[in-house]
Image 1 (cartoon, rainbow, N blue to C red):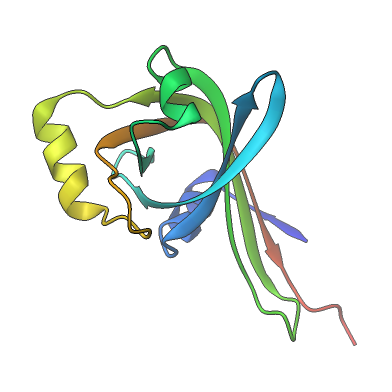
Image 2 (image 1 turned 45 degrees about the horizontal axis):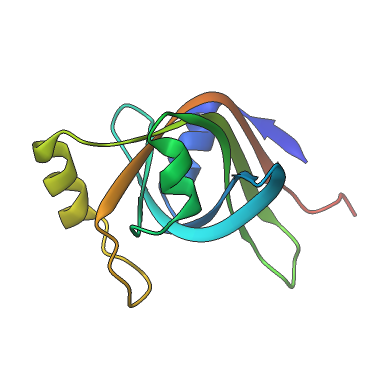
Length: 132
Protein backbone atom coordinates (compact mmCIF):
# COMPACT_ATOMS: atom_id res chain seq x y z
CA UNK A 1 0.00 0.00 0.00
CA UNK A 2 1.32 3.41 -1.00
CA UNK A 3 -0.23 6.46 0.63
CA UNK A 4 -1.41 9.23 -1.72
CA UNK A 5 -1.95 12.92 -1.03
CA UNK A 6 -5.29 14.38 0.01
CA UNK A 7 -5.73 15.97 -3.42
CA UNK A 8 -4.94 12.71 -5.21
CA UNK A 9 -7.30 10.78 -2.94
CA UNK A 10 -10.19 13.17 -3.66
CA UNK A 11 -9.38 13.04 -7.39
CA UNK A 12 -9.53 9.23 -7.28
CA UNK A 13 -12.83 9.39 -5.40
CA UNK A 14 -14.21 11.51 -8.23
CA UNK A 15 -13.45 8.78 -10.78
CA UNK A 16 -16.07 6.38 -9.40
CA UNK A 17 -19.79 6.80 -8.84
CA UNK A 18 -20.41 4.41 -5.95
CA UNK A 19 -19.17 4.19 -2.39
CA UNK A 20 -20.27 3.41 1.14
CA UNK A 21 -21.29 5.83 3.87
CA UNK A 22 -20.74 4.75 7.47
CA UNK A 23 -22.65 6.37 10.31
CA UNK A 24 -24.10 5.54 13.71
CA UNK A 25 -27.53 3.93 13.99
CA UNK A 26 -28.85 3.20 17.48
CA UNK A 27 -25.31 3.53 18.88
CA UNK A 28 -23.97 0.93 16.41
CA UNK A 29 -22.07 1.34 13.14
CA UNK A 30 -24.17 1.23 9.98
CA UNK A 31 -22.94 1.22 6.38
CA UNK A 32 -25.01 1.89 3.27
CA UNK A 33 -24.03 1.80 -0.40
CA UNK A 34 -24.69 5.12 -2.15
CA UNK A 35 -23.68 6.96 -5.26
CA UNK A 36 -21.88 10.28 -5.01
CA UNK A 37 -20.30 13.24 -6.73
CA UNK A 38 -17.24 15.11 -5.55
CA UNK A 39 -17.69 18.87 -5.61
CA UNK A 40 -15.09 21.34 -6.83
CA UNK A 41 -14.44 22.17 -3.17
CA UNK A 42 -13.69 18.51 -2.33
CA UNK A 43 -16.99 17.84 -0.57
CA UNK A 44 -18.75 14.55 -1.20
CA UNK A 45 -22.44 14.82 -2.04
CA UNK A 46 -24.98 12.02 -1.83
CA UNK A 47 -28.75 11.77 -2.10
CA UNK A 48 -31.04 9.94 0.27
CA UNK A 49 -34.72 9.19 0.82
CA UNK A 50 -37.10 10.70 3.33
CA UNK A 51 -37.03 7.76 5.76
CA UNK A 52 -33.24 7.48 5.79
CA UNK A 53 -31.55 7.06 9.16
CA UNK A 54 -28.67 9.17 7.88
CA UNK A 55 -31.04 11.99 6.98
CA UNK A 56 -32.43 12.02 10.49
CA UNK A 57 -28.93 12.48 11.87
CA UNK A 58 -27.59 14.83 9.22
CA UNK A 59 -30.25 17.44 9.88
CA UNK A 60 -28.13 18.41 12.87
CA UNK A 61 -24.77 17.33 11.36
CA UNK A 62 -23.03 14.10 12.18
CA UNK A 63 -19.53 12.71 11.81
CA UNK A 64 -19.52 10.01 9.14
CA UNK A 65 -17.02 8.07 7.08
CA UNK A 66 -17.21 7.64 3.32
CA UNK A 67 -15.26 4.96 1.48
CA UNK A 68 -14.86 4.10 -2.18
CA UNK A 69 -12.36 2.04 -4.08
CA UNK A 70 -11.44 0.46 -7.37
CA UNK A 71 -9.61 -2.81 -6.88
CA UNK A 72 -8.91 -5.35 -9.60
CA UNK A 73 -9.87 -8.78 -8.21
CA UNK A 74 -7.30 -10.58 -10.36
CA UNK A 75 -4.21 -8.43 -9.80
CA UNK A 76 -5.38 -7.13 -6.41
CA UNK A 77 -4.17 -3.68 -7.40
CA UNK A 78 -6.04 -0.40 -7.45
CA UNK A 79 -6.83 2.17 -4.80
CA UNK A 80 -8.97 2.85 -1.74
CA UNK A 81 -10.02 6.17 -0.19
CA UNK A 82 -11.66 6.83 3.18
CA UNK A 83 -12.95 10.28 4.08
CA UNK A 84 -14.08 11.21 7.58
CA UNK A 85 -16.04 14.40 8.05
CA UNK A 86 -19.27 16.09 8.99
CA UNK A 87 -22.42 15.31 7.03
CA UNK A 88 -25.20 17.86 6.86
CA UNK A 89 -28.33 18.29 4.83
CA UNK A 90 -28.14 20.62 1.83
CA UNK A 91 -31.10 23.00 1.99
CA UNK A 92 -30.26 25.90 -0.34
CA UNK A 93 -32.77 25.49 -3.22
CA UNK A 94 -30.21 26.22 -5.97
CA UNK A 95 -27.74 23.70 -4.52
CA UNK A 96 -30.43 21.06 -4.08
CA UNK A 97 -31.60 21.52 -7.68
CA UNK A 98 -28.01 21.37 -8.98
CA UNK A 99 -27.17 18.17 -7.13
CA UNK A 100 -30.46 16.54 -8.13
CA UNK A 101 -29.43 17.12 -11.76
CA UNK A 102 -25.86 15.88 -11.25
CA UNK A 103 -26.62 12.90 -9.04
CA UNK A 104 -29.12 10.47 -10.51
CA UNK A 105 -30.22 7.86 -7.93
CA UNK A 106 -28.83 4.37 -8.55
CA UNK A 107 -31.89 2.68 -7.05
CA UNK A 108 -35.52 2.95 -8.02
CA UNK A 109 -36.55 5.05 -5.04
CA UNK A 110 -37.50 8.62 -4.26
CA UNK A 111 -34.23 10.31 -3.28
CA UNK A 112 -35.40 13.86 -2.66
CA UNK A 113 -32.80 14.87 -0.08
CA UNK A 114 -29.18 15.92 -0.55
CA UNK A 115 -26.42 15.43 2.02
CA UNK A 116 -22.96 17.01 1.87
CA UNK A 117 -19.92 15.52 3.61
CA UNK A 118 -17.14 17.99 4.36
CA UNK A 119 -13.86 16.03 4.52
CA UNK A 120 -11.77 16.56 7.63
CA UNK A 121 -9.60 13.45 7.41
CA UNK A 122 -8.73 11.95 4.03
CA UNK A 123 -6.76 8.71 3.72
CA UNK A 124 -5.97 7.32 0.29
CA UNK A 125 -3.86 4.37 -0.76
CA UNK A 126 -2.76 2.85 -4.03
CA UNK A 127 -2.56 -0.93 -3.89
CA UNK A 128 0.43 -1.85 -6.03
CA UNK A 129 1.70 -5.23 -7.15
CA UNK A 130 4.38 -6.72 -4.96
CA UNK A 131 7.86 -6.62 -6.51
CA UNK A 132 8.81 -9.88 -8.21
